[in-house]
Length: 122
Image (cartoon, rainbow, N blue to C red):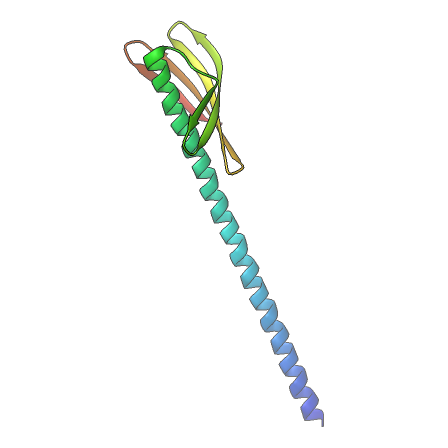
């Protein structure tokens, strides 16, 4: 009779250890998946913001003006002009996509063409 209890106890202990290991592996996989998805979404928000920066540079180059918002197919960005003195522009572009926000500050000079001097992600 003691052998039966030892066998059942051993099976229960091994099953419990197996369940614990399986749970740890599953939770670890879920965490890695969430981290990867978060990285992809941050990158998509940065791509949108950089596209808005390119659009803003084009606007400055062609019309010597900037609006307060830029709308592109993936989303929209806000534009804040920090300073505009003569041919020198300093402004901030903020884009939000999928709950992630990225901001880029630009300093550029416009003469015959536009030349970005500083392109800094904040």
